[in-house]
Length: 171
Image (cartoon, rainbow, N blue to C red; front, top):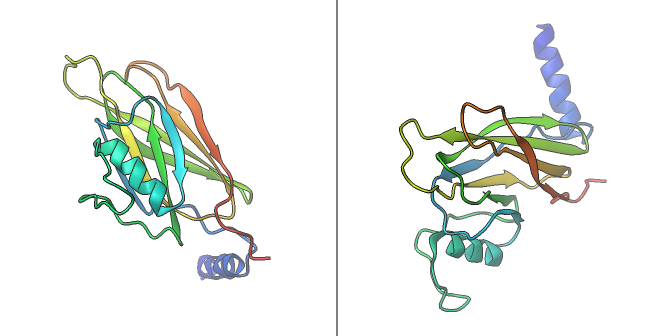
């Protein structure tokens, strides 16, 4: 019964603006092969930029601002942003997984860990990526990735981006 009362009190504080809404990734895709050139960490906040980033990822040439991109994921930019992470060429990395979030009232720090290939690696490397649809937040976002070169090494946590608030205060 006491736990129930504490949860109700916490929800009331969140609704009243006293506590931030707990961080949650709305949707995430990660894989081993993006066509984005070089390293990139970007928080996309509008549909025009999203179309260009996705075209870069898929290596699609846009035939003007209204040209359709068949597999462009839909994003409601009134409510969401898209975190784009492409750390560049990585040997044996098949993608990244969301590891955890450390939250304060002012900031959310999130971490992504590599998913290493389970078999032998014969190629020169892959270009892994992360696309994460995030809610707009009234907090700064700090993003860290483990950029170690092998699963046998210690984690190498690197801050790859810091982004300002994407939602205005309720005050």
